[in-house]
Amino acid sequence: MTTRPWQTMLTGWVLGVVAMALTLPLLMLTQDVSQWLPATGVYALSVTLDAALVYLPVWLVLAWLSVRLGTQEGALWLLLGAASLSYLILPAWVGTHWHLAAWIWSQPSALLAQLLGVGLGLWLSRRG
Image (cartoon, rainbow, N blue to C red):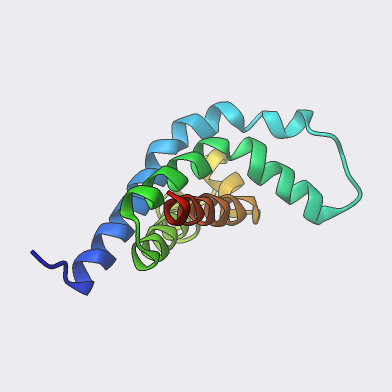
């Protein structure tokens, strides 16, 4: 049985949206961790610390899913699905009425965490 390109695209995108939606409750718990991180004068370092520590549930779930998908194309669509929930669907659906959604789409840490998760998953799938 062969997989058609549209099936890979749809599966990866839906998995990305669902993965981000499932990690939203975990992000509610880890959101307060960013207050305890050391203040740095370098913005890129602050964003990276946020992406690595606060968004830990996101990049772990995305890494696991991209390992399971096993293809670069599937992982790319997984990333696009996760980013579309973070930066398109949530702002259109709730706007700034939900503080967690506004916090997610107002900073680049979510996108960096998503890139980290999918990149780590691709790297692990190639090694394994």
